[in-house]
Length: 503
Ligand code: NAD
Picture 1 (cartoon, rainbow, N blue to C red):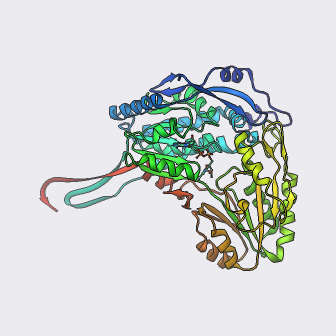
Picture 2: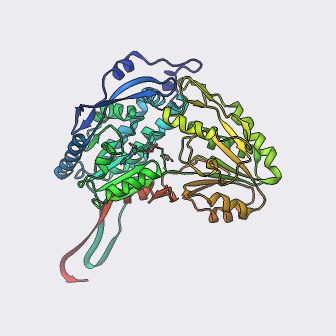
């Protein structure tokens, strides 16, 4: 890692190297059946740090989706991948993991160019975690066994089988990371896939299929990539395709609703990771310094564009002022600026439409709101200052809606019950964190919160074996470890009678 790190200068703005400029100058095509395929229509992807155009991307439609699904289906039926041993499939995924790390500087730079997130976050966080996903699922899938029930000379055993063609639909906030979260278990289980990355962030997926995938020996047609938009375009054609056996989707809750309607054509197996409106609950007995540090991270990491973010912080009244000042001080200290400078801690929002959306919430911060930090935007590019507010009613739009930006709202509470009720008063139920030194209380409150993930005295710690997903409108199903293997495979039970008396 240290050697790779040397390729990224720390104190200065990183320039796009010539080889990457040349690569970006060529249109990014779909990858279908092992070949690059152009489409009639194209769109442009931009760098949110300054709004400049990075690359031209193929805009997939029905034709491209039909071709990709047909290629995936044919590869599945030929069995070149699903009939390989689990060991061979896992070895290919491990190789992919190694290649991602070898290409870390290029992938990190592309991810930051495409998303506007700080280079340090791509380099030290997102891209290594994408590599880790491939390695983890390779190791995990290998370890798994199955049960056998012998009854005399009859043996009943079960085995996992691939599903067929799996559609993978991903958002823009953690592009390669979330693509690998789906690709790794889907491929480990022997499926053929069609990936539709977000139209906002197609570049790292394009790089993966062009430079890394051909080097790991996965047969043509097993991994297909169609670029393009969702509604009425590539995404919708993909999720409504009758030959798709399963859809793994991460994105907004309203998109999940639309996909569910389209997928009724199957009906198709679904896994949805959707929106959130996370919360932190800070009790007066907590380590307030640590709580403020982690609450700031939970509010501002990735410019607040993380489903697991905590844009609401409920603070026990007796420490409300002191805690909020600590949180605001951290917000004011964050280095906001050029995503391509390694010292930058917060970069730009993904693009103009999202920038306008977040701005519209900032414009609602009039009386009775008190703005403790931030509240302003910066241009060129799509920058929003890390913002801390208090004084908003619980039914205010900022308190209720998923903003997905660097805006955290702080609320005082008097009692544990009041805090629990406030955290649960949202249609979302993805994650929350609790800050207290009282173990009984931590247990009680975590039991009462209606969400899929709870952290106590920490935030964002993940073990890839644990079930990941949301309650209420934040998700459907769980992924992670065996939960991912369950989603991307189905069990077949076999009973064999050997000669002799039946048991
Ligand atoms: P989005 O729903 O707008 O888009 C996600 C993907 O769905 C994109 O690839 C898009 O092209 C595609 N899509 C859109 N409409 C479609 C349709 N009708 N049919 C098929 N595909 C369609 O989400 P986004 O703005 O890219 O991402 C931000 C959202 O993702 C936030 O709500 C965030 O909370 C959520 N998210 C959730 C998790 C989680 O694990 N729960 C993780 C990351 C992001």
